Each structure stands twice: as C-alpha cells, then as structure tokens.
Image (cartoon, rainbow, N blue to C red; front, side, top):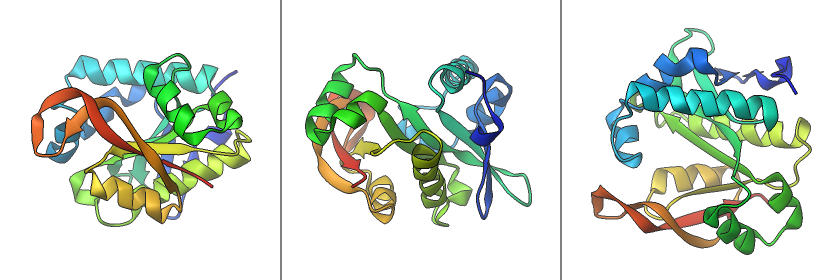
Length: 198
C-alpha cells in the first residue's frame, strides 16, 4: 500500500498532509509549544520528532492511516497536527479500551482520533475541524464503523472537542500520562476518559 492522494485532505480552513519525514521540523516546532509540551511530559528533542515522523510515514503506508500535519489553508501557516492512528493490537492500553467499547469491529480497526494545536490557534474550533475530517476519513476511506478518542480525565479542552464531535463517554482506563495537580511527573496509572463514536 502506498500513500495516496486521498490521504491529503482539505477542510474549510485547513490543509491536512500525511506526516512523513519531511515534516520533522514542523512536528518539533509543535512540541516546543508550552501547552503541548506540558501534556507530553516536556518539549520534544529533534530526534523525538524525527522518530514520530518515521512511525507516521510507516503507518500511512502499512496501516492506511496516521496523523496529519495541519496548515492554515490560505496562509500556509503551521497550525498543529491530528487525525487517526491505529492502536498497537497487543498493548495493555488496547485491551483496556476494547473492553470498554465492547465492539469487535473497533477491536479489528483500532482507530484512535487525536490532535495537538499550537497555542495561537486554540479556541477557534480547529481541533474540531481536524476531528471531523478524521471521522469522515475513517468512514469514507477506511470503511470503519467506530472510532475512539481518549485523554487524561482532567483535559477538559480535549474532552470538549470529543463531545462536540458527538462522541460518547464510555468510561475510564488507567495508562501512562498526567494526574491532575501534578504535571511534573509522568505516571503509569493516570486516569484517562475514553470516548467513542456511536
């Protein structure tokens, strides 16, 4: 399977390009943003961004889906990243979510939706726009019936996006992340809220 033209998407305000190795500098820039860095345990190094881009490039070819890099449609300005990815089939995280969702079709597709926007572009509905396009791609291109999204329990901004996308709270899992009131330490059992499309 090769990266195809259908994998680049255009929305009302954004151009969404499949992340590849050529996006390493932009991904690094995104993860220097203080708000994003806080949720990811600190700013990424250049090699972190390159490794992420390498994984995305592989996934676009082999899984048919991964994250997009988002640019403003008219100015070309970097906005953030987001879109779909497939959870690893044998992970504890995957097994916990599959038990909550209780849908064999989702367990086969393992599609997860997420986003990370630069602070200058937050509060404009652009995460929702990326999410809507991700859900459209899941249905129209991948033929998926269900998509999940999850975030730390106290990440109210991301949970608000999930709710605007009409995803329904299915419960919580414990996994690696942040605990409310302590963003200085990555915990192995942080509570995450899991949402799923109907």
